[in-house]
Amino acid sequence: MKILIAHGPNLNMLGIREPNIYGSETLPSINEKITQHALSKDVEIECRFYQSNVEGFLIDQIHQAFADGFAGIVINPGGLTHTSVALRDAISAVALPTVEVHLSNVHAREEFRHHSFIAPIAIGQIAGFGIKGYMMAVDGLIDYLNK
Ligand code: DQA
Image 1 (cartoon, rainbow, N blue to C red):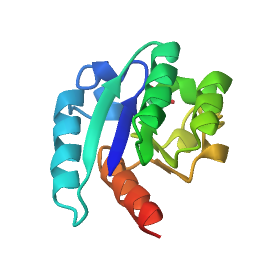
Image 2 (cartoon, helix red, strand yellow; image 1 turned 90 degrees about the vertical axis):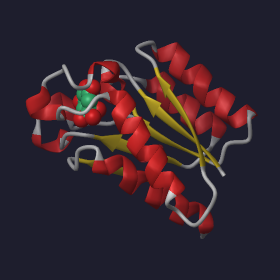
Image 3 (cartoon, rainbow, N blue to C red; image 1 turned 60 degrees about the horizontal axis):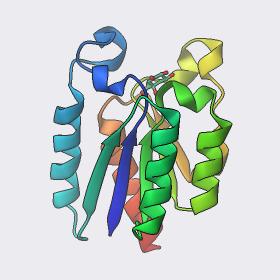
Image 4 (cartoon, rainbow, N blue to C red; image 1 turned 135 degrees about the vertical axis):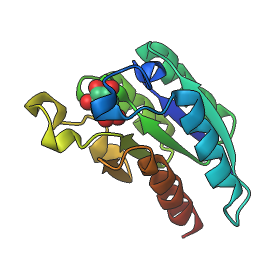
């Protein structure tokens, strides 16, 4: 099965960006760990990785995943989590099972990070476990798809 792993704005800055909050791992290194994790699963999984700082490019990529017959999406929408009706509509439009991931525990941070436009249409949200959250999201998505 094919899975889109989408990273939103500023996640290309991981490693440099507020390491006390987001850790010291870079995005390429995180993607490599997700690949290794996916390879360790019993089912065959192909991950497509995508990062953009542009809302519309992320939306295009979600549409593309649908057109390409992808099974599901793991997305860290970054700051767009808290602002983007359009990103939520894109996920609703393709109706692909989607897991929302945050490195930090957004619920323990500033109030404006407590609301997610994505969570109500996601199959689940994982927040606060650092990069392990991506592995948990992949596992949760696979379990969901195998049900
Ligand atoms: C984030 C949390 C968001 O509030 C923030 O805007 C990010 C990163 C996280 O992974 O913890 O860019 O999604």
